[in-house]
Length: 513
Image (cartoon, rainbow, N blue to C red):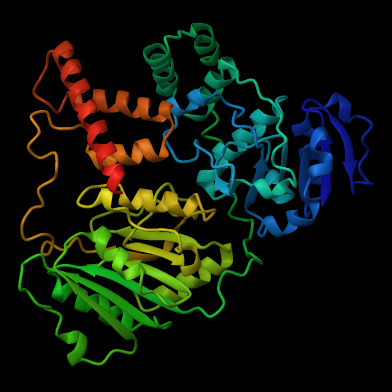
């Protein structure tokens, strides 16, 4: 382990690097020195730490936290990040709003303290300029390499004392430059528009200067040669419970059970929650008892419809070490559970969402990376990570419950990875669903809410005010061509009313969520 201490501008000290001369470091950028260290010590962990945090650096924990080679960790306890909060006008992903209390996925890296394996830096292969601003360099690495499979986290355990902060002064010049270099050019225009619209700011010079910077997103950086094998133990017994909510899909559910029966790694139990809102109705799943199955089936029948309620009923019955969240109209191959557990063990994570595709879809995502949501019908989660999680009732019969559940996991310190293999075929069965369409509380409103109140509920629960504003701007333009009001002023007035109704109902749902 090589430790680099700096003052934010230059390297001051190197620990455990006796063979590396520090004489010329003062005339080089911190990023340049870090790359030179990677070339000199290609098998080592490289650590950077601001001199003010030297006594707080948790050296003993670093090797445990960096439990495989495709990870990049950093931390700054300050509420102000290197990039201005206005980055939320451009980036609406969960990686912007960081929970500093737990290990949290983000590309927003910090120069205060951090660590990475030298192999990751060597993979850059001179594709990214060694910026004189170390924070900019680290954020650029995180933003470019996260989609390529580098797992990036804000990790509070890197410091013993998490209350000490280093003040950061965000710059609009830096913000616009970063947007121009790491997003499509149109986002720089949208950033300028949003700043004018919501903050009454018009930073024309930062915007114009940013147009002269070259975009970095086409950099050819490959991480495939970096082998991953976590030494973090997340699987002990390897027992699995499968939870399946179902309604009116007897034949499709039977096929799912047959696929589970054929698994090379059998589940211990399958928890089925059958719904039928018709009063006096009974179970239609006679094959659960008339046929023999190599696993225990726990069957619950309820007249209360709703996938959120059904999954919560199932979560109360889990007993195994792992839970497979499944739908009642999927097909999986015989090695599915075995290979899923192998991949989980390789990366040392407690939550994964697997590729779930339809027959006509072409596979597009082939890399394992940090996922932006959660799939309630195609995910594995460790049972001990679910103790404080539930599918919130406010999302019932709407959209957003998957994303909200995933955010609950992340806010407990459990990242969600996307696995392109093994695959799940989603049949999208035409039968099932609700016999009678549920009447939503806002159904009879004169002005219908836009967006859906459940989508708004997710926005106000998990997004920054800048992200919500950006979502509003984009929705305004996208929806314009789909609605009948073509007068832009009349449309704007009506859209504002729809947005306010959505906020109202989202707050109502939040009270029952």
